[in-house]
Amino acid sequence: MTVVSGRWSVVSHCPEETRKLGIKIGRLCQPGDVIALDGDLGAGKTCLIQGLAQGLEVSKESYVRSPTFTILNVHEGRIPLYHFDLYRLSDLDELEEIGYREYLYGDGVSALEWASNVEEAIPAECLRITINRIGETEREIEVTANGEKYERFLNLTSCSR
Ligand code: ADP
Ligand code: MG
Image (cartoon, rainbow, N blue to C red; front, side):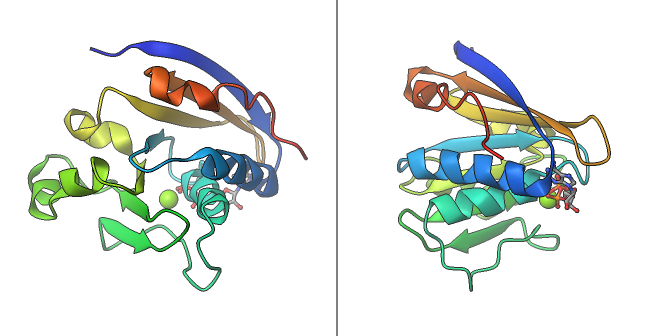
């Protein structure tokens, strides 16, 4: 059962704008937050998470990129960032193997690319971000707060250029 507390969307016109939105979200993050991202390959999920990392004060040396061959990358920041890429996953087994619940229900911020690939692993209460490519460099970014806890992300109504 999912309680939708609110939803908003914004159009990003370039990677930098998407990144800035990620920074704003990262600054508001608290331990235990789960951010579930969806969108096609090249939509900008990793780009947004790079901003998220910056907002979480992850050092620049701890490069955030799509963890192609690993499901999870951990970055130290103000709060740890658990960056999952579930592109190749089609069932829960591999996630179970790495003990994903310890991360998702732990004291870091979990950001999961391709969350809808393993919907059953995503907590009902989370921040959902869907990125749609609407032009060469235009992206529609839809943000849904599922649960009261995520309402603090609802007043981010624009990404400054
Ligand atoms: P994903 O993780 O969703 O597969 P990436 O973040 O790795 O996507 O890549 C997004 C690509 O799209 C990058 O090459 C980036 O430069 C490009 N891009 C162009 N416009 C935007 C935008 N507005 N927001 C994010 N990325 C953009
Ligand atoms: Mg990616």
